[in-house]
Image 1 (spheres, rainbow, N blue to C red):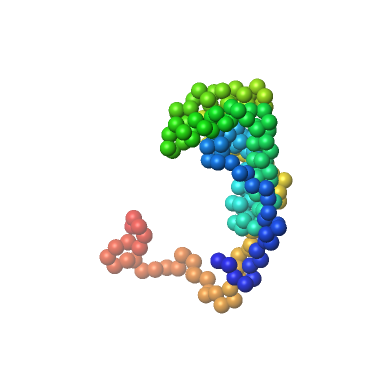
Image 2: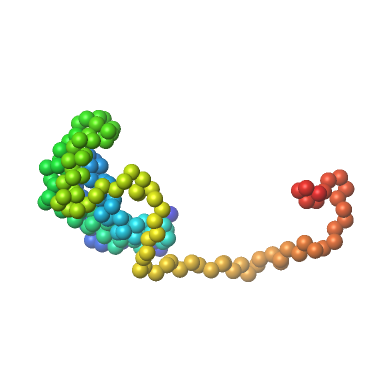
Length: 174
């Protein structure tokens, strides 16, 4: 919820160069991009999950966008034709971008990435594996328990003698 006290960032603070690529190009480079920008992306996701406020993670978000731009600039410089062929295959061979019809162009793109950028395609379950991310960012401050001045008195302890139950046990299995 946004109130009058909520401070929103200025537009200039949010302004960043966008990655103007279509879905097929992003899907074609997704595995290599995920591997190349893994630490930057993990830092951003850690910030988002810990801070619970996206305004505090603007710098990390900008770093993710910059990493994506640098990755696709390197791919454009070295493997542009292979990426375009693979993206066109993904775009035109099925209506939902299935990769199974484009394994030949994928292999050509992967070999180009290996030869010119020294990047292997990660294995199938790589992005699902549990990994430990080491960060230099300090952990967020956790607010302490709230104090209520009119709190009810403490509940008496359980060692007060009680008469036996009339019909059923007082505990679950008595």
